[in-house]
Length: 328
Ligand SMILES: *Cc1c(COP(=O)(O)O)cnc(C)c1O
Image 1 (cartoon, rainbow, N blue to C red):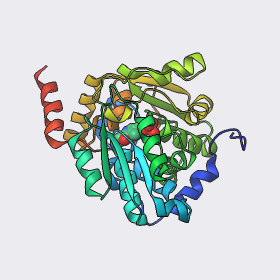
Image 2 (cartoon, protein in one colour):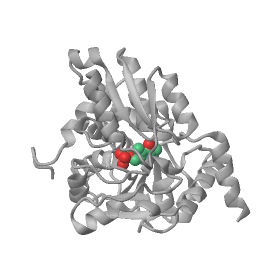
Image 3 (tube, rainbow, N blue to C red):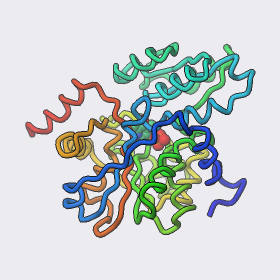
Image 4 (cartoon, rainbow, N blue to C red):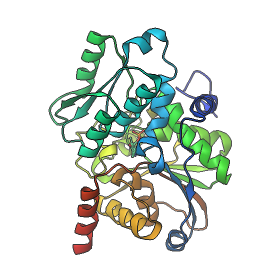
């Protein structure tokens, strides 16, 4: 159980976020798949966050954070640095609140994400993710323009907002034996695990990160945050270098296991979701399903929740990925 003051968020923070988000966020559907159940021997419940506003769960955390700005913060505006979905989340949330948004994005981010961010009316500043420190750049801009920086995961309001995805899932399907969650910087899983362990302490929470960047797995194993070079993986939403100071302790406390999947397994899951379930999900959004289908997690005979975290991938890029898999 969460001790007040010890961890960055508790269950009540997620419940308050749910009240702030009511009527703004989409209550995304929970999908089922007979084929998925047959091939895993489990009963799978997919929380379809690729159908969320901006195409990913990140709208939840972004909106929850901005809705708590005071008048001075709203007058100056918000700044974010992001590989994409957080950028769109902050851009749309800022527009809904009628405030200015400046977004610092890597220049190799998917074109669809850069265009969508500009489309929501945000000012976009591009940087080179392999040579420039986006945090330093973001903090510099924030200081010179008086903007409030909202980080993509390591912020209590962001983490609490992301947890509302799990809150909705449990409200709809009740107790689960296992909840499988994509893992980058840990904002999504820290919110979801907080909800899971409060509501159903016996529910196992599993984080899934790309094989190329298993910094979370290493961090939990050695008991301190391990930083790695930006991993080269198709899971661009999980190309983080390290867990956050706030997300790590929650992951240590509430996450039972962290597993990894390969890019090939992600592509297989994209194909499965498209062909069997008619769902268009981005590589990072497939981390949870890939772990289930590859047998990386023990789930036979269980009721399982899987968060499909996002669907923002260029159509051409999607076609290229699933086609190259076919040729192998
Ligand atoms: C950001 C993101 C993740 C990872 O979330 P964290 O809070 O950084 O762990 C997973 N999937 C998608 C689609 C994302 O945009």
